[in-house]
Length: 88
Image (cartoon, rainbow, N blue to C red; front, side, top):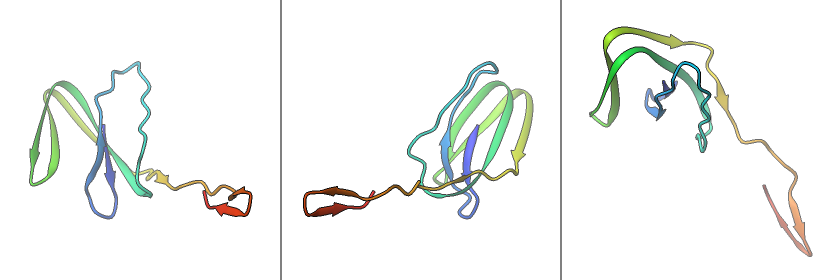
């Protein structure tokens, strides 16, 4: 699975996930993304022009998910410590 930035077409994160597993990505910059999912066996990974390329050698099936998850910072109330106020 590759998490791709919709506007820059750059890969933000890549992970191999088994069919029965869950996975959590952290520290994702704010933006709109889409997923590139690769199903298959014997995955090969290399870097080309700064992009991570992953291909399946056996039984390859590729899917681009268009649900476009957005990741945005959740605004929280500012913290007040004495006379100082800090934004969160």
